[in-house]
Length: 148
Image (cartoon, rainbow, N blue to C red; front, top):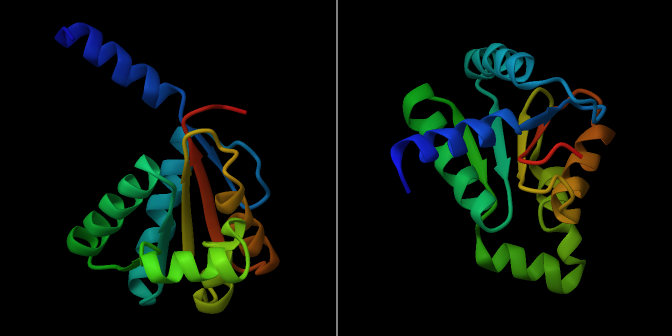
């Protein structure tokens, strides 16, 4: 791939990113990034946790982002990548609950969830966002590559 084509593709991917707030409303990349930055500073000051979730390649991005935020931002992060936990919840409850169940049990007031989904339609990611909506005080964002 040529450099120009690579940059063009990367620019298009970034342009197509959709960021939604607690109510599922599209807030746009600029506003989303600005809000995330402001709230992340508050999370660091109050010693809260940012949870990152995703499936497949989005799970890899979630892990990488969590590591960067923890290392560079000195912020507590959590990623649900424990195979035993995932398979136990999938087997005993439902795969749709693999993120929602730990969020329900572990997330506390003023923590944040960053949910990553290429399509924006992953049932288990959506369920985690719905679980956050039940906790009216939770900050969460859905980041996806397609505007649905």
